[in-house]
Length: 116
Image 1: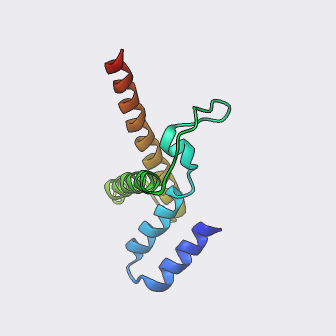
Image 2: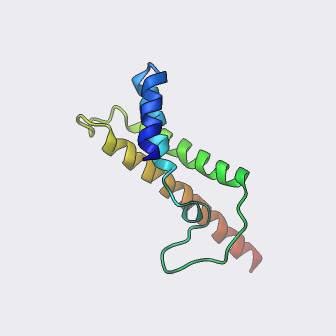
Image 3: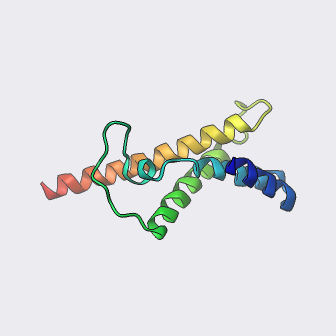
């Protein structure tokens, strides 16, 4: 529900359709589970709990949203998206979270290799 509220508020206060779509697509990134986005916790395979405070959480969602926005910008004129924006916004949000988590996993892997 909160994603739809963000989309409605954006539609009310923003005039540029691209800005409205960017805001709405960013709300899709916000639907990610913080533990999964920040630490890669998968169902049935929890990692030890790490403390979360506001700034790393905000930074994680901001970075994933920025990556999603870049993916959207690169693919906006690709010709693969005929009509409708919801599917594209959702896919770009998923890809942004996936790339962000992949970068986090690569950094964790490099730290483990360096410590060994």
